Image (cartoon, rainbow over all chains, first blue to last red; front, side, top):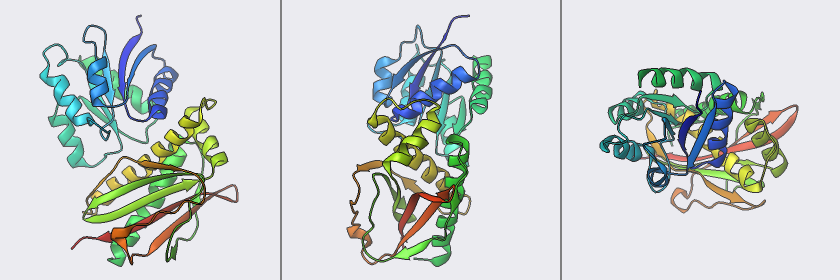
Length: 126
Length: 161
């Protein structure tokens, strides 16, 4: 099976590293592309290769929600599954993210198993 | 500041710090009795600062020494630390998770505010002066593991009219 090409968007390099480690720990073969905010992610998002996006919400320059809106507006990227991984855990924020086109939502702190379940759910949908 | 609200924030921070350390750093921590302090704080080696705006204004500060910061970030990654930048970045992310999780708990109590991305301060003995919060009291919550104080959280806050 080909490695999963995941675009991981987070201003924390430790969190990006932790997401890759967690995915590998629960059995995914991962080929990560890392971006430090929404603007950086838009530059690195190749619709031909990226299978999944995991994005933080609060980031400098372009936040996660603005990034998700841009991805959904583009006909080439609008179907790529997106999981938001954030400290924003209120129901209001959760609904706001879903309304903007996020497929699923994980709050930090998280466990690798929780990430695996969400990932299987959104990849199964796509 | 409304005493009940202030206590709610302290309790939310204690819960969230415990959960973050247990889930991400695999460490069981215990809070010590919070205490109030007048005047300036005195920070340890690596410090994350997050500002609060909305129904509460102020800041939450998480500060730890460099040796413990290395251990905490290394536990989180399950790996050797590759650079000092990783340690500082990791403490920032720990600060972010602790404050973000407390924010979620407080939103269930109808206390809503926004948080900034963490600003990091590296260097022991620095102080932070909150000009807009002149006269507010500073509360410190020390946390322990294995009988030693390992980091502390500080809360500067006042409610908005």
